[in-house]
Length: 266
Picture 1 (cartoon, helix red, strand yellow):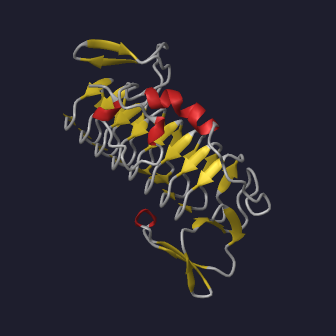
Picture 2: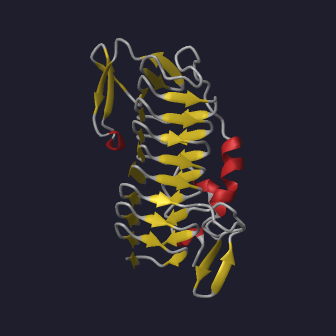
């Protein structure tokens, strides 16, 4: 019931090895630090991408190399659908990513995939792995150990730390995710907050029909299965697990524990 295979289709996820299908769905959070620490990160040109200060001008990333965006034209289409287009001398450059002026990159363990847009004002702390065609919007704050699949969105003033986004997962506006996992095509309404620490301390336990299950984790936000959604200004208590296709209605607080697939939480 609480195994990974019950929540996610990992067949297209680039980091499927992070998960073990027969283990509890939160096991990937236990493995995330080791997985990201062992990842091979490209070396960014510190002259063009200075560490810890806003980029003075936009840059493009191509085949692991960083170049000035001067003399390039950029078309800002829908990034998640491959709409970010970069041309030089009227020739389109394939698979190029863009980091806009004003973005802040902290640390040297950051891997940005192809067709990614990082808007000005975003702050990305090391380590981070950003999947292809993902959009990191203005004011986003990635606090470290953040991993996204393909075509994800980390939106305006959304804060993320030690969390995983599967392909097409989106947290578009004013959200907080700590120690959490978003399934494939999961979507957070504006203002969704995932609380990840109990007031009284101790490990987070999951309430199920068969009783409490100790996760062994002191910090544990929420896990949303594939195609699950939250409404605007919703909140989850620590250790909330929502099955595939589940819906958390707007202005609603979800109780800790397991909510089966296609449950509507009111």
